[in-house]
Length: 469
Image (tube, rainbow, N blue to C red):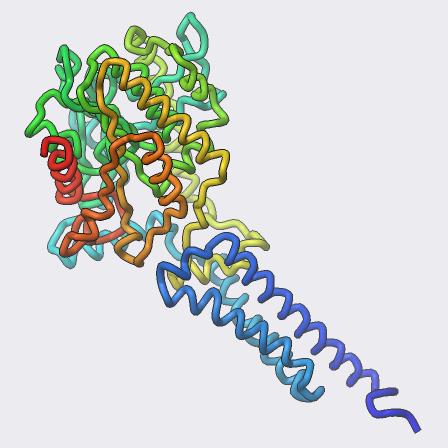
């Protein structure tokens, strides 16, 4: 007599195979999901209990359940597999629907949230694009353009008109009116100085400086009026302050800017303004460029004597970039925005975006990046010491540290250790922001962005307290 389970009808046997395969594939999916999340998003466990449950606890429970399913009867395994398949079909149909009929893009969603938040505060939010603002101001008779990033000039597709060879500008076009970004409801417009930086014209005529700042968009003053950014606030006490910050600058760009423009002024204080949210990521890109030459003692492009060549290059780049942006904007209107990606669908990217369950990847720098950062900061300190100046390291916190809890900057302790080992005085603004009664009030509309007027003012006040006493 045959044992139970053998010589089963063909339909029953196929059903059992189907259920076993379904359970095995499901187990593999959730196991891979857990591994992927741990490798790329493990910091969310520290920052918010809800995503920790959603991304860790729930998948782990499914893995345990699926492992235990081997002890279930055949009938229960079949029922469980049917439940999994029907649920998966519903979920992936929803993902497919959002692919075919997408919600607004991330940029549109940010704008919508800002408009809503502004309305709640009685603020009329300007929803125009930067390009439209430029066009309307141009029609009104003003000579304005978009503000661009020096990092873009490192593109290999851009050749220099300078006779001495390839030129890498570190600022925008001189004496140019530029439109910045809109985070608080309006577009700040600033006039660049004689070297293309965000300073009052005439600052470069100073024989000696009290403060000189290098950094990225936070230093440049995105997205507030020039007199409200860090340098503008410092000028209220120390008028001889020069701001060399430019958006998307990483440590090598900051060192390059310092070496090209600072020595002739011999500033008493140089502020190295560091933003942990992306500076080491920028360094990972910069180390693949000729900017590494600035680690060599004595290297310089002589940019202070090549302003006309810089202006010609930047103007040409601006014209091409604006034309590209117009073309992209037209395509965006007339073509479907999303394209199908199996990988993105398996990650349920659009469903997670719909539920606002998207997170930035782990950003811990590797050993090589930290070593390079130490070399860059050490070279900056050596350079400033040449004229007896003092380099200060100013560490800026980001929005997520106060909206979700602990920092998402994974290499904070390593960077602080490097600063301490080099003997560079540290001004850590994280402590100052944490002591504030309402840290989120230091960000425009209480949303993720750069600082608002109050946030920049607090940074400047803390710097003055630490340096001036």
